Length: 126
Image (cartoon, rainbow, N blue to C red):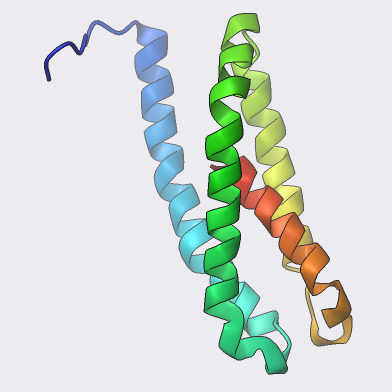
């Protein structure tokens, strides 16, 4: 492509390949496995809304990360904190999505709280 430089350093290539590898795994997890857990454990009276709720959750998390990440990424790059940020956001995603997976019929009153936690998890994934 015009104007694109392919003269990347070894570290830049490593980061790009790491990002590409993580993208495939995370996409399968967020878009396939988590909705299955969500649908299986959701209260029966809400089962017809599960796909729409999950789609809105992913959209909200992606929108938030799209608004926040350019600024936070610039700050992290400025101070060289990229690796620690990847570690922290990965841990936060695991914790948030694990809490989200704890939804059950007898705790359906907490469904909106868990949806908020899932949005945060998806945001850290993005």
